[in-house]
Length: 83
Image (cartoon, rainbow, N blue to C red; front, side, top):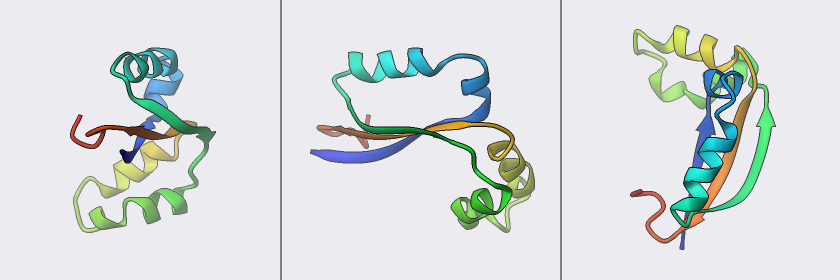
């Protein structure tokens, strides 16, 4: 059994895709072990994406990810990382 993280980004949340994403995971036999809606601060987004700090898109990425609510999920299943 593997675990991985999945994030529905601010645009997916604002466009109402949460239910569709959950249905896809469940339809594929992937278990949602935990799920929470959160708001990342700019500082939290910068920390999460620190590996990209020197990349040209870092500023726009962290601005975007802190622009609205996101859904974070812990997914469980056989080969869930590869899927």
